[in-house]
Structures are given as C-alpha cells and as structure tokens.
Image (cartoon, rainbow, N blue to C red; front, side, top):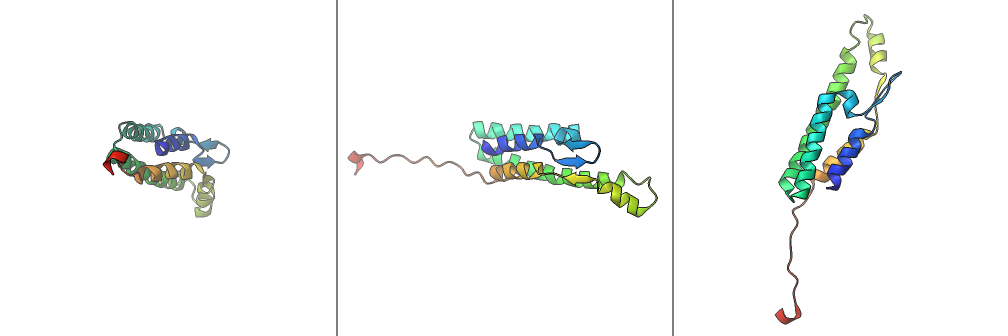
Length: 131
C-alpha cells in the first residue's frame, strides 16, 4: 500500500523542468500518460486492499515500463521538437533546456516497493496446552 501511495505522490512531484515554462508533473507532460499512470496506481492500491500480491507486483512492473516509456518520449520529443532549426548546435541547445527533475526517483521508489512485495504468511500461535 505504501508503494502505491508513494507512486501517487511522485506523479504530482516535478518530473521535468522546461526553461521559461516551469516544472511539469505527469499531467503536464501528457494527459493520457497521466491517466494511465494513475490507473496503474489505482491497480496497486486495489491489490493492496484485496491482499493480492500478484496484482501489486504487476502494477509495479507496469509503472516501471510506463516510466521508461515516458522518459524516452520526453527525450525524443525534446530532440525532435526543434528540428525546424537548421543548425545542430542550436537544436542541442534548445533540447538541453528540458531537464529531468527528482520526481522520477519518488515514482521509481514506489514502483520498487510494489515489485518487491511478499505474500504474507499467517502463522498460528502455539499455546501452552500444545506443548
């Protein structure tokens, strides 16, 4: 449960910083990625409430895949967005204005917590009469 809550908080943290525009979270980057991300968080919370470890692990892995996909999309978008410039140094300078922020680490910590969840083993208490 903690992993899903940490992931939900990480989605609202600053993920990228665009010069002259400011910080963006998941919804600032792309609304569809934001909706998919919070559906995965909801899946993890549902797994925690129903005590389904496979559902929590699946949501952790899905969040990791989505984070990698989003990081790649941001990188490709920032490097292809400025192709109207005819000089490669200007393209690299403009693409360098997009900086990754610390919110990604919060999301990855939450996803790692969901991926490493263990099934709870219920042990019966030994009473004195059984000895």
